[in-house]
Length: 299
DNA sequence: TTCCAGGTGGCAT
DNA sequence: ATGCCACATGGA
Image (cartoon, rainbow, N blue to C red; front, side, top):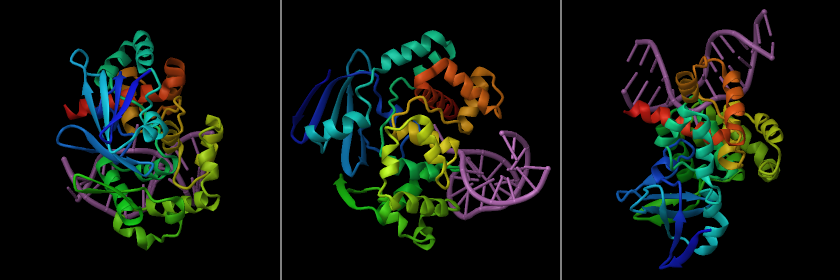
């Protein structure tokens, strides 16, 4: 499918389509990637630090090649190929949405290069517990504080140190005082309680949820402290490959009211709409909508 | 000063 | 099952 090769500690992947780093990293699904002055991004996932650059073709700015600096073929195959969801054909998904729904077609033009990342389940769980009633810049600060305080130093890139997200075992042994300087507010209690549950069975149940049905995963996630329907859907979408998950937050309420004239408080109607019109890829549709409304706010 | 942010837990109906 | 409200924190 792709032409992949390794050269000077870089992995180059040619033949990429439907890809844009700003769309991917700025659509609210992840919190730890940093944009460099050359428009590449540096980040850490699954305890590996890399820099990723995208070189578009001259014809189409969403097609081109990826350059992974600080990586190798084996990590590409085991981690990054899935992390960036490179095996999925987003052209077909976008085409199907656009043909059925001219409103969605417009939203898609803003976020054409979005890809749903497959992130670490545990990190995603805690990250989205932190996200509740919070804003994205502050969520990023909270997560970074947890990593630098309790994670392992994994790598250095251009003088910046990168720390891993600490395991459930590590967090489960902390107290609220240990976490106080991360300014998690009332969420620190939720995090410690959830960490104890997850660490208690060595993350076995959480990790098995990737293969479980959406209903089963939802039921387990809702049993955790600090996880409600919105957070559970984010975890299923951004770390478990359950693409029909449809997280509804204040922004999605806003955009669905604006574009589809559904009352902001009527989330059940929004879910119904998503299921009917976007089906198995509802979560991807949701990301186009989320990115679209937030871009509109900025303009 | 008040309002808001990728909401949820707890409690009262 | 549904409706309220408190909850920490910092930026606008």
